[in-house]
Image 1 (spheres, rainbow, N blue to C red):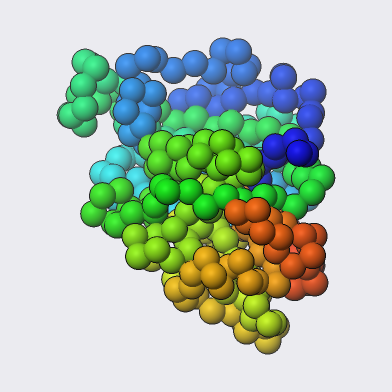
Image 2 (image 1 turned 90 degrees about the vertical axis):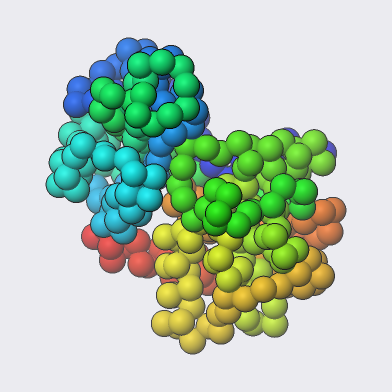
Length: 302
């Protein structure tokens, strides 16, 4: 069996050993970027995050990413403590400090901050938020299409933990990934509460059937920015695209399948639950969409 991979697999880059990290207004060496064991994020997963990708000196779709970050913070009643302009300046300062121009990935993380005692109540977080940016040299490196395994862990209802929220509490997705790896796959394919195919533990999921592109309704998954760009590109280029409920039967019989995310853009899927999808390689529709997305990035990041 070939080695296991993930959709966030990148080429090794020695420069990442010496990166500088933004932490609460300071830019510090990687080894010095530390937070307290009393931090809400470490203790309880109480925080939100956002991922960004740098192409040709420009952070792609950064306005939409910041919209999502501030919306998520509002949803959990967390004051980031910075304006949008200040967050953007922190990103640019970190980029400049690391001398990054392209092929970089940034992870913005905001937690409720250091707690006075090691318990749950948010009122115990009295020192203000913890805000950090990890920025790495990062070029995707996938030697083959991804293998998926359907897992028992579901994307749940909004009244439990809304799957649209980019929160630090990722244990459900981590357990899904572990289950998939135990089954010999790279990542987990997760169903929704009604048994329809939804998303993977890390990315949005699409299939292609008879020239049509299908993805889930979006009711039980992170409505990814790259996901929406693919839907928009299909509509703009007369590719039939549907946000709909569909089952594993539809999925196993698909001509192609692919994943979307900020890091990997569009990642082909070659196998699901031991069943080969199409010819097991990147299909023509996936390749076409990747080309359209590459052109979109070129326009966005000219």
